[in-house]
Image 1 (tube, rainbow, N blue to C red):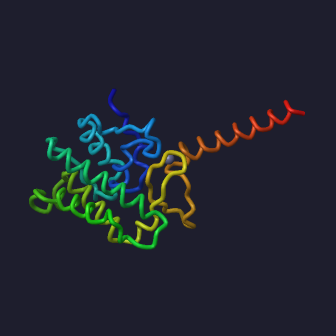
Image 2: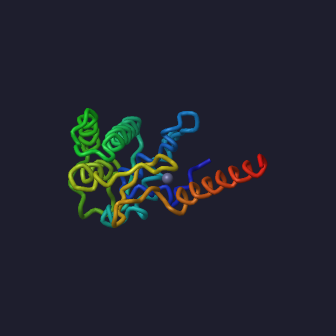
Image 3: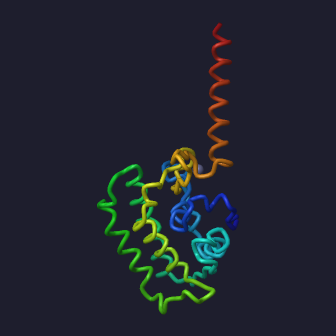
Length: 195
Ligand SMILES: [Zn+2]
């Protein structure tokens, strides 16, 4: 069944993090799965990102020309970005053993990009992804990358006091609250039963 690329699936705050989040529940190998396992989803993800990431993309729409090599480049960039930005959460330095691999993946996605396409209404997905990763690396925002406490996704915390816990309050925040409520109730009922 095709993936429904709804707003929640773009909770990362940046194209590169939305892309790392196309692997679901990375911290749980038994339940984890890859929404790009069907490569046709890459083009559908890119198409929907054009509206969800409109500000980052300067209003341009993304296109993905599918080939085995292009799929490999996207997955390599996605995985190396996930490794680096996950490993550096809460850290003071970007110098990390995973940084060279990420830079190579960025370069590989930029090669063959052709002429700068600022004036074009369309942008290659690979180019946009590489630029998004570069922007995150080179600005102060990487210090604001967090891991969602509920689903393990990466997101940029733009809250004023940098205290956001969930990628999406309306989904993961509520799930955690419901779980805590359930556990509290269970504990109370348990106490009553033992009384
Ligand atoms: Zn989440």
